[in-house]
Image (tube, rainbow, N blue to C red; front, side):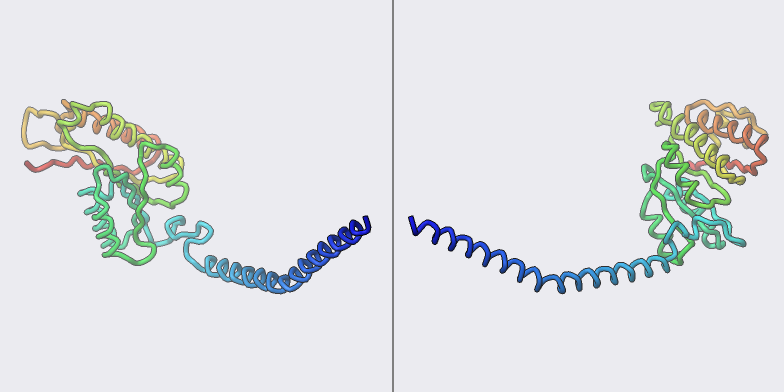
Length: 251
């Protein structure tokens, strides 16, 4: 029986020694831990200062604000053949350009080539967005200060349009309506629209001139003609400056 108290006493002594060791170890680590916190705080402050000095911090990108003497043009379908060449001319003439494209028919290589030619900040930006998404389109307009729109984005094959008419009415007519609604909501008053000679159908006389009756005979031409009608109807009541280009594809 006498051994039992001594055993308990020894056990208590051992536990006390272990606890005091832990306390001693914590005391030694505290100054080091505090130093790490101080270093982390200093690094955080430095990072914030650097970010504040960067052009895009806090949504202050040059693309998001109007600037005197600079015209910012949104080029839809700017990764395509006509759109990329239009962008090249705009940049050469010192316009600021935003390309929007979902790359379903466009070529990212064309965008990269333009970025290499015009690497200066505030000249060219690319936004990957589908014009069939109204929320994404509205977000793009709200985050950028556009002065004009050149609308080239579209699917553009007559034969394909007869096989997939709904796709063409959606991609051409519906998407054009989405762009117009965003322009109206954000007070963008200038539009250049890429249409097609397919809106003339099979004219009775040649050559085709602007006054030739437009009687399209396939979904592609009809979708473009509908878009033209929507644009012209809206421009009459909105004071929008509009130009419609009807391209002829060489054969």
